[in-house]
Image (cartoon, rainbow, N blue to C red; front, side, top):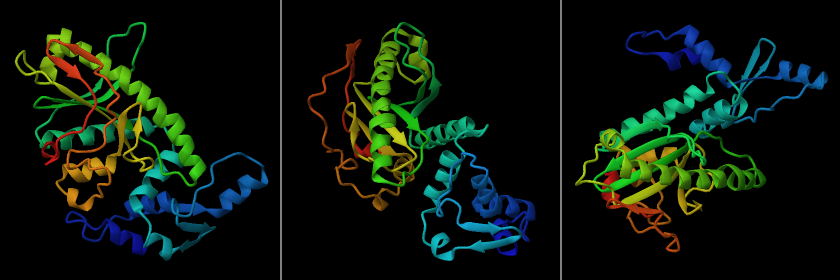
Length: 281
């Protein structure tokens, strides 16, 4: 506990906060006695991986695994702890909203106008809530945010691609159609996005932004999948830290040219494509 308390030292609490340290320790602790008791009762439950909870608890004894704690990706470990082991927690949806809001705030610092959690009018084909819409110049961005976790095997990653991400691609296409229709017909909606009659988007970029890194820079339903972490790094102007295998940052990524415009109305041409690198500078 003493070592963990040092993590909580701030200007307001120079000696740290024991209560916060206890919460941190609980978050990273794998209670071996509790797990053993559950297994003996044959009760179902998720088993944490060591990188998700690298502090082993045997009764009152805590054992830290420094070769894991010191070398692991703590960002992925924390996301897995929250989104895999704790996916059914009461506050899981609120955390997803905060991820979307944090991404929107960073976009706004780069000059984007954003709209969060827009619900299109319900019709026969309800596309569902649009997580994040952003405009910059003549570019429109419709972003489907997925709060998921890092998979532990090739099979799990394949299932993620063929279920969650594939479905996200289909959802995104319907949401882009709903957004383009609203821009063409609803002046109040255009005002929310800072659009005017003489400034409407001519290009639309549909992105699937996932908190996991599986299938990064692949396309699902012709839409690019990127990681939330990648977007945060680029928006903080640290794109030199990113690998760019598909030329996304240079604005010349490989686009599926077979994709035709989804809607063309009132000067609005919705199509998938690459975003100029200047947009993220």
